[in-house]
Image 1 (cartoon, one colour):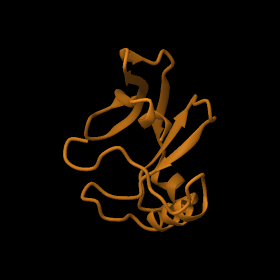
Image 2 (cartoon, rainbow, N blue to C red):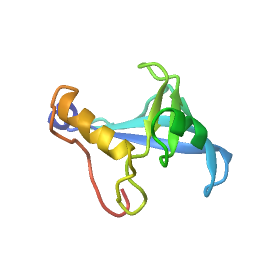
Image 3 (cartoon, helix red, strand yellow):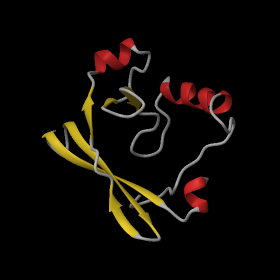
Image 4 (cartoon, one colour):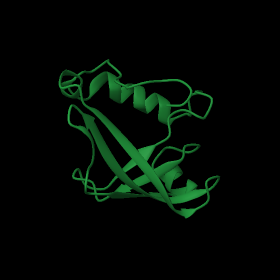
Length: 120
């Protein structure tokens, strides 16, 4: 909400480091802030690596793709797939995500996103 009030957009760029486009295993991430002064690249980058399906299963997310974000200000953490490429829920991760949205954070029961649809 603060970024919208300031008329600022945040863009994340994923640069393939290992693997292929069809089977990526590691990305470098960087962000750009687009605001009244133009678009500015955030100097600090992060890394994401693909976790195994066995790791996903051990964490209770079998059927999901799990990425590990490394070097974030929030520490290292997992990003878990909750829908497939056609927008269908991937269980059990989708139900856990819905439960978390309803009970955690500053706006329980609300889902925030910038855009949805083709080309997003």
